Length: 144
Image: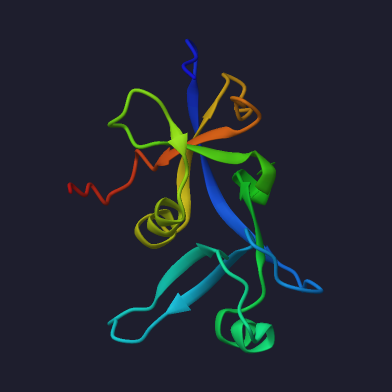
């Protein structure tokens, strides 16, 4: 998945909720968790099992969301079908992005991330998906 001339642009996660006729496996949800925390945190997760009471589930976790990336001036960069790769900076190749990595970007980087692009600032697609990484110019500077 390596490309010789790649550049990074800053992007931000954006979400659009929708009301489905029924819940299906693989739907994404975004909810805020506050219990036991000093400050609420976001939790992004993928539905892995259909709840018995779908209305109760959505009253607790909200409606499903479509995830996409926006850039400067809230311009749409990538739709949910093209979000798929993550470069953790430690592995030689990007891997499929996880819900935990999306959650970390939302909480630790306020939803901002770097996106591999060409010199004109257009996101590069590898197998139809962009490569996302943690924001490099962040003041976080966390070490794990």
